[in-house]
Image 1: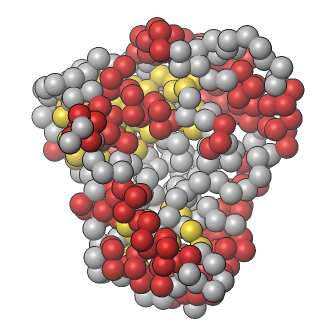
Image 2: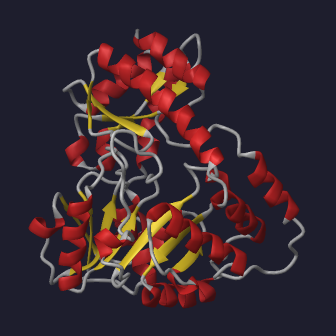
Length: 365
């Protein structure tokens, strides 16, 4: 066994391939609801900004242009309610998954350090811990479940992937206060924050949560979902200037630069709210159609008050549900991809086209 394979879990999506082959045999084709990848066009104003910056022969900077940093601080203040953000409080990154996977390494964590994350969670939190030799630990409630003496990095994820659960403001406030008391660095993955349906997600950067201080807290944001920019790898972090300053120096040495045309596209994307509202309407309609069809078919939906997924169950092992739906030409993600606690659920993405969502609704009907 190689050194890499011995410290990393099996890549989960490989296990879904046999079910994908089954779904592909459906006479009307597959409806792939297993991955939350955008399918709608990149808004024209973002494409235009990218093209206008295409003649970029020189190296971009890791910290980004002044225009980009202005856009990041301005958006955080306008959309998240953050106050008094300086350029030192923001840093562009090359997609949020890269940040999640390599953050523990860049923070200098290793053997004996604990990286904690929700019991049901995006697999890359665990991967990031294992890449640097740290110990991954899951929690239901970090304040009640964790030994604060060991935890160096605490991941929050609200809205949650996969469940769509949203942490209430008072809950976030309680966790942040506890983490600060024990000197634990908090990174809050908020990539789905603009996709609240039955709840209004709050950022850890909101003054009601952090008290107007960014000490010990960093928020992670992505343009992949809200602006259909998964292919651009456009994301950023915001919060504690001391932490971001250290990461900036490390990322300079590592050459982790957001491409100059992508920086320009990000400025355009964060400066426009209209395209976000339009995309929300598309997702809201797809969510309503799939939720109604699943519930009418005997599924129960839990949480799912935000994000791009429905957390659904037929009260059976998740792989039985995956197989059942694959026979109908519908591919979904098994809940145990996100932890043992998801073993009787499936995650259903509503990122397919309107036509494919309609096809899934008909098959469930």
